[in-house]
Image (tube, rainbow, N blue to C red; front, side, top):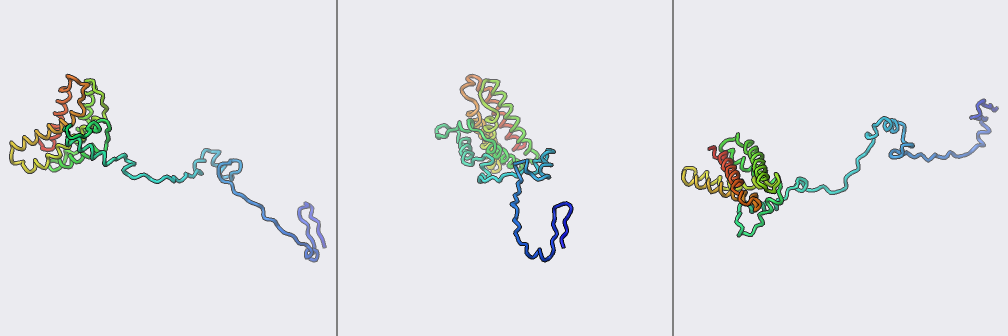
Length: 237
């Protein structure tokens, strides 16, 4: 018995005729395209892209480059900082150090480390001066920079900040001596004066160039006063 459907899509056959039928069903080749071709994106992807939310579907590419060391990322050169420290502590030209590298190649982390070390030493006397020392370093360097520019010097604020910061090293060196000879007033005063002259000479010899000519004392004197004030913050005077 056979029924003919009205829509023409299906044909019902009897069981005896069904046994004689054979065939195969091919599997369609289905491909999923998710990405750049917007005409083939799924409906949800197209919907998001049309309304400006396509960034939700973006996938960041993995960075295959090797990660740099932390010191290199922060632009910290230990050898360069160590060389600059020696240039400041031994300012005599006869020693053969290229001291101009402290001025011509300024950095931030070295002077900051020196200022923080000086601040930590000052905690022995009074804790409140730590933030004040950093403030004096920043704004004192700014004052020296403005004065140098007014007098015709060709220095940048970064150079002045670095030189003033590194030149605090002599005051750090004399700090242990002051603890030992604190009871001898005359000797202690001489050591303090030696430390201030040492620091001021290291800074002034780098910042005060030949371009100042007869105006050198006008810049050397404020530098000297600045280090006197730094020392007073340590001694509490």
